[in-house]
Image: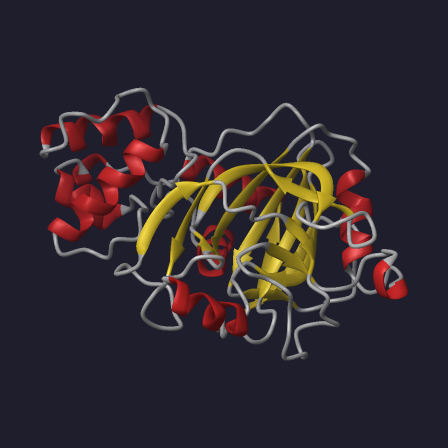
Length: 306
């Protein structure tokens, strides 16, 4: 068990070059971690979580709200991966229609979900804003470095899971980020139930035009929360922005990627180059620049610690 709060999140964001927005509320997803109290919707100084194994059957992730002004957090059970049946449906179509969002720093805007159905099916949710990095699998039921990487607009919204909680063997996702619970909507005469309406009301209560969303592995949050000061190695993701990202881009250019832009913005071109470099170097092509990738790029000796 570990506790996540303002201090740990601030440390994680600094180590990731995730720039904090002017708005108070930041959303985050922790893949493979669940709140120990799945029914507490309140903003608190810290929340306890347990690491778990993602199985694409049970909701095994946490979706959180970080109020950077009051320095408090709320954490809700959910999923950041697609449901197993959704993956199975995509296999005959070379993965089309199903995807898994890669760890990244992206954005949502308030809107209606789902966008491809009529008003009777729609309800207030958080809608993908801009391109997201994601993978599609066409050969098996997991997502790994052999699966194709895309940076596009797959419609990976943040919405209700239509699942009672982590103990249920179902959640509704083809790649969207979801929070356990049900929304009020006309079709099926469904009413607000579970943690989804509490998450929705809390986040939308900030009345922001957009919400930044940081998705990382739960174990990365645990490391940020538990390691001594100066021991957390920097890790850069799609959406990172800053001087260290620029240093990585310069190193990529010097290592056989002359077309890469050097602007300090970890976007599509940088992600593509990082994955290609990692595979060429015999590393896991996860698109994340940590100590091992930095070493291979020749910039590991001065790799920052936080």
